[in-house]
Image (cartoon, rainbow, N blue to C red; front, side, top):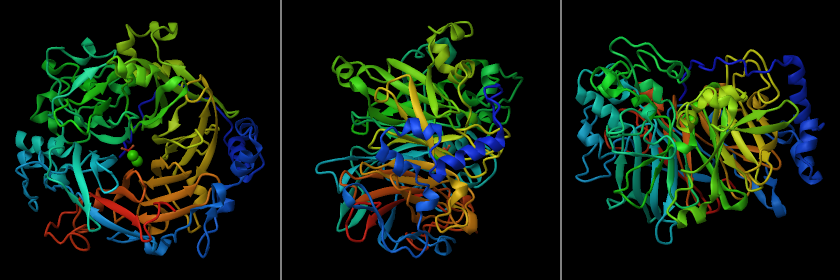
Length: 617
Ligand code: FEO
Ligand code: CA
Ligand code: CA
């Protein structure tokens, strides 16, 4: 989802000649290597492959064979969904693939397993059912794992008309229902006779806005987060996520500002403005019945600073309190892509999704295994950086540390730097980007990030080369010192606009995941061209070949990616089908789950190749 109003007031945007920049990026993509490409691609073989334009290598409709990847294998060889087939109220999938629909909003997962009732729900029931707004997720195998495991799944948002059946809450019970529909589900799944089902077992739990949580890291206990004696509850607007190398799930809080409002006198602080708080929020109306979300209630001073964090969940321990890891900074976290870097340090790449906001990197202080061995979380002690993209294809990671005199002048301590990470990044001169969404690390160490769009950009720069940028692009970079150095080199992988008018058309890239073979899975969220529904595409990173694997239903968004260890099963989601409007679609009742629930429901697709092969191939 997006928060439409940019809140970055800085002049960090370097002025660049728009026409000149556009020419430069065309040069990169056309294969005439620019300075950026030359320095980035010091390996001549890689340079040749990278210099090839995705637009040039796309073979479009009617192609018969896939692209040869490493060792001559065909990396992306499936029959794509044609544009003409990807419209309307039901999903479409490649003829080489099949899908099953599971985990619709309202499916009971916790005892006493209350059934979803069409149009009439209670908060108590919703706290035991799958939430709404399916987004980031990950699969944690149990036993042999390919047919059995725990799925953690984010429930980003659901508007009042969809969840409550009315524009505004009229009671605390309404607010509690809305709050219970948000958060995370942890659910055990098993595949029997080819069909995936929920296991009504001990791991299942719902985490929502009223679940007890705890804070760790430098901002834990800071007065900025309100009275330390006031108990901490909840996570909200859980967008994307990331699996850690030690088997936990990190869920990321994105547009948390929209759930707060003010019922009385309230004048926003500089920080509240920078994070987009307003008197009415996004119109959820929680503040009218739950004072915790009322910015004008002094009793809940600082409550808004308890949201906007990365939250760690142990999928195998249903009694664990989710932990907000403050060392990773507070902003509108899209997701966190974890990788082990030099010295065994854990590194997380993170987007802050708002127009003109930034890309961040977290690096643990030490080797993550050693830290865990002495009972320390690698996510509590480390360094947070923000990206500066130079127009010559180089970049720098600027550290958000109170040891920097520029920040020491403005902030009292590291807790404040982290709580107001956006303000600290502004002061350091980070590069405002076109809405950073997901990040992912490819097997060759390159990091990819979707920049979904920015209709309000008026000045281009090399990293954000379109002004305005209606349909988005995908940028990539490679850090020095295996994800831990202070510098990087970058180029642009794909510009959505370049696919328009072809069979590979897409816009508004959002979800992103690189598999270990070098395929890039791309999910979209926004108005696609040619009446297409939102979609899941697969690209060959080496050749740029791009194919459409699946399309969703009218009004939805395709979100979340998880795979089983053998990668023969992929999970992805339809989020807000029909935007909740049953006159547009009542998916999945008609074509998939004939259970009588006619309100359109977010749900998960289980995607498999018909020949049992690797997904994406
Ligand atoms: Fe939750 Fe930026 O999408
Ligand atoms: Ca989006
Ligand atoms: Ca997103």
